[in-house]
Image (cartoon, rainbow, N blue to C red):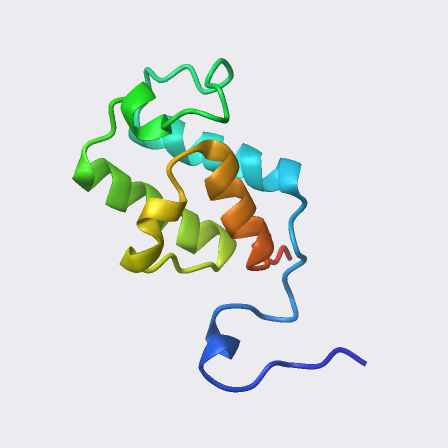
Length: 106
């Protein structure tokens, strides 16, 4: 039997969605960056550098990225955590640790 979470967190994740692997989360992040910065070379983007500087994301682009990632993964990133997600590794680890979920299909 699958337990359904209760409380305010329950709106973020549903039992219809599967938790994503770290590699899947990295792919989702790269796809989201390309949608916002189409000329970005995300395949060549080092995972241990500040991706915002590397692909020239301004503050509005960054917020658009976080919004897209929340829609795709179900993980909300509050402003207080922005300093903790400066590299791709940090962002992917953050999303993975919080149970980034693939959208339900069907």
